[in-house]
Length: 484
Image (cartoon, rainbow, N blue to C red; front, top):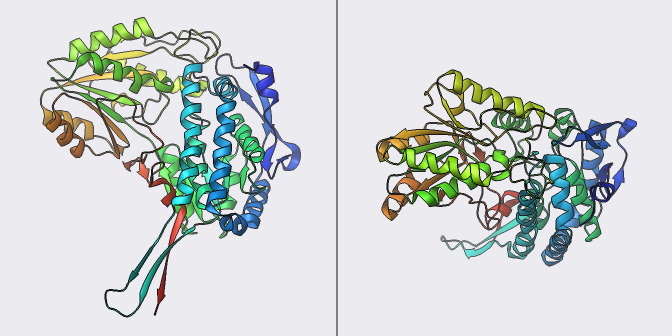
């Protein structure tokens, strides 16, 4: 495995527009290690002019890339998949350094993120339309699929590789060019990915990466430019709403994967040991910094104490807080001091309102942005933690008495990304899954993400789907050709 110094040295620190280029004005910004707050690297601080240059490059090669045979596009994506896989340990270490997650979590993300390139390398050759005789007998109907055109992807910091690959993969497979604006907290992984794409034979200009501290400033000229035809964003609902408003003037195609407030519902007939195992995954995967993380635990009153005691025991025996690069660590630091303060504030608000802390509940202090796995009970309904996405390793547990009450509590949120339910009753599983107001449901499973499945939500969690056969449709337009 390469050393930290070697991995960091392998990453381009400039913008990527047909290769590494300096930012206009030569500005840079620091990327920090969440485990100790130290600076990992200085990367280019892109400007609005740089963003327009990236769009110029995308527009210049859009027609050529769209005309590239689907099989050739797929082979390039497959080659990128193989390169990511070959350098999996380097990618994992890089993500741990800039985002903080434990190395096992980073390795899982590399496997998951790389798979989008393999999946969509296969989907590229399966884009198809329709041919039929008009029912009136007056002619023929041809339905043809074409790439929407140049796209802008804005990705978050919590999954530095996977949140990019599940946008880049289908866009490139469909024949679209793409500009990626990664989060300023975690830009290094995306820069390394752009380098690998080039090495795999992706033509210059098809994929650009603009790193910048000023996301709004560098993306606004793109949203205002009629040459841009698609915006895809993963992040908070607040920012998503703003981006939808800004994209409206250009009538851009948009897909939004926004915030979550996932309920984890445990019924009285559930396998409690399995539910605890699933809860550990649903809550602590990625340190709880995931829009799919279980945010509220609704447990039937008949089993709530058994579930809570076993959950706390599992945390005490299985979870070790520490730097993500430590091989014994299972829970790394949060990504930033701001995120640490947000999590601590939500826990303190619940405790001040009367909640009980069963484990955790206080940051250990010292260098780095660490917060322990925490379980809260006796939480009053007015506590913010039941309404807001905590985005950290905190599990609030609330009891319910009937199936109807549990379902109502699960749906009592503006969000609707994912829900989790545990029950042995197949009829109940189907009934409740159909009644949950979310785009995805895990039945007796704590992790549901899969490149072969459509990922996305409803309500304030956004619209559009990523992954599965549905994912590539987000980057295709439908053309009807009428023939006599």
